[in-house]
Image (cartoon, rainbow, N blue to C red):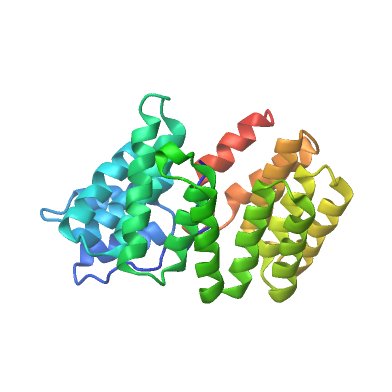
Length: 283
């Protein structure tokens, strides 16, 4: 199962609360001060579903997936009809599956699928949930509920909601089939339809790097840099690509240090992931 990237919108769906303590915790969360947010929420004498969700997301972005699942389970128990809560619980179980032993991973993966499916069932137009379920179906084996046909069916659904995102889904399907020509075509089409979305250009740059087309990948990164030179996501993804390809490690270190000094939001990869990459470069 693929790594559930946290470039997803973390702020959407947070339920407003009249509690000043929860409001303060949310401000800390938005500043990526996750440990402080957890402490503020733990101090509450009574916690509602929104408080548990915010705490669970904080644990998730701290990389503590065990506490994330335990806390988000409480949010779902308090409000079982909330699609957003099931989505984040699915993500947390997905990361537990990726980081646990071969003996426990299948159980966590199945729980991830169940909560993704429930999220989509509760809100059939929630694109985030459909995308995560699509990724699960595409990557998970059949005995864990995955399947290429299931993923392809969801890709058709994505096309009805977001034509640009549909090209990304078709890219994923084509890459899975090892039809790299079609995969590239779909990525380029998505980038053409959203020329100011840096993420679309980064998707293309990373794909080209995986194909060994280093010069073209660099050109794509340079194009993204012209659009948003100080975008933290650009810094992180470029460094990650260099490290995966074993090149430009000194530049990767500089990019990651700049990333760690940037003003991040919950939509960006957590700092601990950047620190982990930095260690891989010897920095």
